[in-house]
Image (cartoon, rainbow, N blue to C red; front, side, top):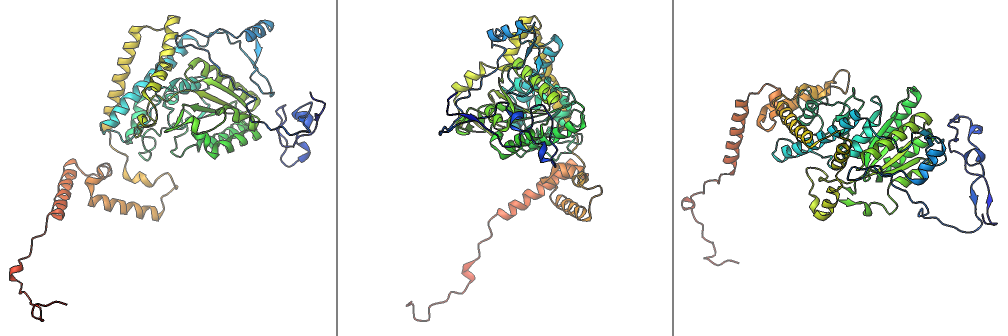
Length: 500
């Protein structure tokens, strides 16, 4: 250390490293400088600005694309050997290191590995079929998870079933992992009478109270601070549960992200913040979103543990999330995970990615397909075969198509449910507004086929209304008859034909 440096105090307010929480009404309980950093922070007597380039965030990988595992790092192997096969988590940034299994162990047992892979296949098939349905006009909107299955499903598999998941809108694989059936997916997307949301949400806004999966909300990043608050409740309940919130790197540009991380760190809540860095916020590439080294370093501004992981490596995602959960639940510390992946599909069914990225770029990432990577690993274990791949794919495609046909035939929710679930008893104003809606539908039933059907209109009545409407339009558009000007007496100018 330079002889121009000394040690000095730090500002109060940082949570003590032993995990205790000071009473908010007792300022004397705030941590001291020695509690935060035993030797105190470095104090300089000359100007020295920092850019953050001094810190390089590594990326955690376990599985190669060919299905083989990366060798254990030499330093990690020596550490494991010295401890007899057990090591401490060296990813901690000075806060409560935790014991974990050596990294050379087998990542999954056979049954869990196969369930993860089948869930990945189901998600890919669901995406393909439902995008096709949207193109056929059978569905209004869809968003695919294609290319990000390892991040979504690998993280969900590492959680306990009663941990809360607060997702963004591309995490259907996490819900499928927990047992959301194909029929339940379809009922939501078609908004029929069996939809838990009663047809009020646009497609892909799933949710399940039983499966601890918070209903998707359209506004970007709102689930992130909500996750902090929910995790604080879990901490108070003391049942050993945590919350994971999943979002894209574009959502990390919202103020909600920063507010959530700050609150989570200050109140030491068991929350995992999982960022799917898929390279694009709709059409805006990462290089135009932020100048720093991605999302992972932002955790350090809130004194939070962080890790960057290969998001196409399902084993790495699983192990990182499992370790993060251990930190969150056992030490009441939030963790930020940045999963580096790629959105192989368009942002949504309304997007055309050819306008902002090249086919060559997409081809590079298709070679890194996370499903192919895991399949290669399963085959290397002797747990999967070409025959099983074909049979499973055919079975899943039949399941999705048959489920879609069933959902399309179901009636829409009753129109009266439009005003329920807000007040215990609908107010007079809501009832009046509902009656206005019904009057409008009775006048134009063809324009609101689902609402009209819920009011008892038959298919023939809808067709008659449509034809009557077309006839009215034709009458309105037909030219008016020209008047016979011959019968109109012509008037000559009074000045003998001269005009002024």
